Image (cartoon, rainbow, N blue to C red; front, side, top):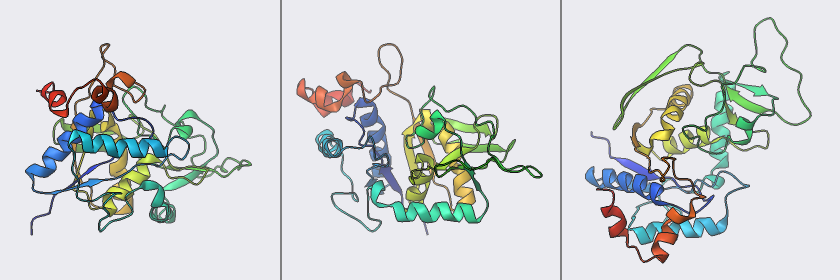
Length: 279
């Protein structure tokens, strides 16, 4: 029996949506429609410090104004509720415990920028440095003494292993574990899962068959494929879209207020006019 297509929109309520989000999400919606599939909206409010209620409300309003329609989500429910990551902690914890039981993760007592940013999706040019293995257990050597606070937990990547996948737009991709990325955080010391772990667990639980997102997350796909394998889940297909950039060629960020959907709407632009510029 053919697999029913399930795609998703997964915005984070840490700022206002901009035209870069809209373009990628529109591609996701079009691909779901072309496959006569289901489109899921998931509120990725994983970061308790940066996610704000007003951004959730603005996100829903802006998506509807732009013409997005989803069959499952925080506002309409569905068979895989809840559709907000902050409410899915029990599932995330169970996934982490499964990794720990299989020996895939180890405690890390380092305090680093990549630990602080582990809740966010990394972007090209903003990748964390490759972890030097300070706390990685080595046979015959005692582990680093525990610190005062609880540890962060890192996935032990298989150094030297080639991770390959076929992207729906970018074609064949190839990364080497330990060279292109190192051991990465999957669970933080403040009892919050990382972006990498949460998105894999939620996409698997919601039976997403294709992940459509920006091409700045290609390297994240390599990390996530290791998590799919470690958790013994079937991985979805991937389609990475081109990025919308500003006048200097930099990726649009949520702090770029001039490109936010609500600013463009206030200027009198219509969703149809914005989409016309993409062609």
